[in-house]
Length: 235
Image (cartoon, rainbow, N blue to C red; front, side):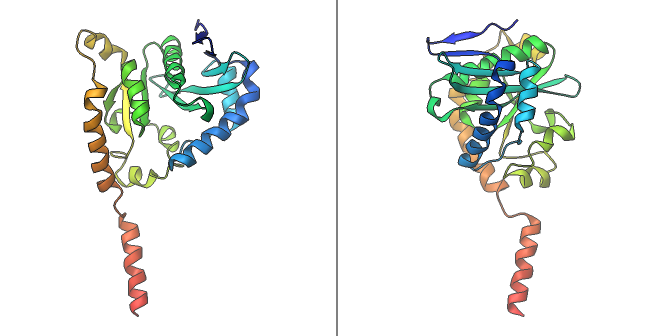
């Protein structure tokens, strides 16, 4: 059983239930607006889908003690429970930079471990803040080939503005970084020093700049189209 957590006498973070169904439409709208503001895409989810996650006990919601919505996250499974993803993390704009995202992710991680104790917990992100949270939970960066091969998993990337990069590299590269918590590997590495995100974050930022320069280059099809246009203008 996942116990609700009271944070700073201000918020309650808990497993969502039927009492939170009324929030589904607001959550979906905020997810879409947040993606637009970042200039990225997300796997679009309908209010019905979010409601299903709540009723299945596979979602975390944060509220103020007075009942106002603060944040949300849900979990998905792939390859018959071999992989679990904590997806759709969103925090209401009024409560960002309060540390509540870390609490929501931690509770979603706890729920994932409780429901699927042998599963690898995965995620893909371009956000340094999310990488920091994941790193503190025990995630490690992995290549995209170590993530699920299920087409349904990658279908969620289709609404991202960088999807063409993923497709033209045959899912080998993208601006996102894959991260994974492997319970078996974690047992072996408990005595070793965890990946130091703060120490490596500058290196990661430099790597992201290099990836942007390489992967955001014009695609072959766009290059051919531009060449044809020039030929038509010349003619």
